[in-house]
Image (cartoon, rainbow, N blue to C red; front, side):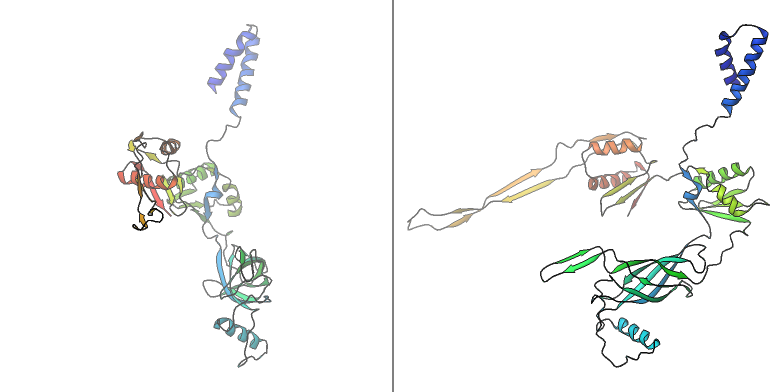
Length: 392
């Protein structure tokens, strides 16, 4: 503030008369301007993430549900009942519960398929609310298109029924076949039923009555946990938060405050998460992801492949026409080419370089992703890569 006042006074003094009243007016103007400048919002530092995007409230979670049911109404694309014993027994049992006795009879319907039904029961789902379900064929059904899922209880890990599902299966794929060709798009043996299950049982969780809450970091890190606790304490003006471990920050609810209102405010805090230096490699697809904090010590890199190409071009040798002697023979002709890639030179990567410089240096060698994976692993083995390599 003092520096701003001095700068403005020096700037404006030559423009005003040198009288006491004028100088006093100048001082007041400088003070008001400096105060206004001091209250202007400063651009935020690099803090790209909200607290709600990097941490979850402990206890607020989804619960996975599963069930076994039957899909009917298929146009000859269901299970072969003669081969699928569980489909046959399920169909017989369902008909018996409806008062139809089919024991001892021959069932050859191909319009029924046994399926597994799965769903996620989101946190605080109340009785009567609806959730989406996924239906997947269990037997040898060809397609579930046009099928109807019959009433299917969905149970949790504790064996209790939490939802009941029923509805028309929506399939994104299809299959069409003829005598000489078959076309398949997507997966016709799996589909979804939007809002296809009704919640029958709630998962008890009293969030509003809690006196403290634990924030679980999605990517545990000591530095990130410390930054979260410091940001929360700075916002609340008290030591209400503390990092208990790299993945947990405990926040105490001040007296007279509602936890719901407090979390609504804290979720909007901007936090700059710290990231561990890591290189992720997917050798199946040749994908490489290099973190921003990856550093490489000074190292020399050379890369080259030895390629040997052998080509056989046999020639036929025949005697002259009407010759009484000689016979037709095959004369081998072999061409061998050796490519040692002598144009590949030794490249030097300076120490402490940034991510962009590492990528530029490796690309300068003219290598592809596959060879780059081998080079990164070799740099790590030499001890020059200050990062963790994770192979997927």
